[in-house]
Image (cartoon, rainbow, N blue to C red):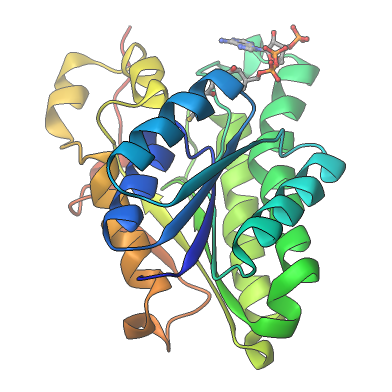
Length: 251
Ligand code: COA
């Protein structure tokens, strides 16, 4: 990853932060974006203290104009863009009966439309001409009914579909596109929220990896070692995927 330029959405906290630090440790130049300046400032300071060449840009990925400005800022600072990690996501546990029109739309807008927005902006500004690599952080939801996650599961199924279509449409342009489906990841807000809905038995049954473990999978997919891998959705979950589809919910 040395001197590769990586843009990570939602890179200030949780899984995105773990990816930023892992790729930074490998020598990548790391650009992170998120909605919250305070989180970005903290993460960039910590990355720089760790010796990583890092920058941050405030961006709501639902807003195409903000997305385009962010990609422009990265190109202005580093003069290239090698890897896009679509990690930013919004989520909350809610049964369908409690999900408002706006609640469903908001999560789909962040998780699916936001991924498209950043993907398209990076493609138009850089990847179309120079090639590149995209890694989408999805979820192990596809092919199952996921109580409390109707909005996120629909959005992430869309992300997986987008991953495959981008890979096919752009394979002649030296652009690889893959997704990672993390199982439970410790120290993340999403996991804290979801945990409150799961039974103790389920929580204990499914092992959690760290955000850094997801960074390792991103590094592999972004590396030349994966040069023939595109259009794939890779579960990173210690093989717990089958169990995840059978989560028992707390009463
Ligand atoms: N249960 C039910 N509905 C909820 C909800 C919950 N826990 N949290 C938010 N919503 C609904 C809101 O009520 C609103 O719908 P309404 O207008 O019909 O009332 C809608 O979702 C949008 O919420 P709002 O907070 O106004 O939107 P936002 O754009 O500021 O933030 C999220 C949306 C999803 C990002 C928000 O939940 C959030 O800030 N989450 C923290 C970050 C996060 O999601 N981390 C986990 C990543 S996996």
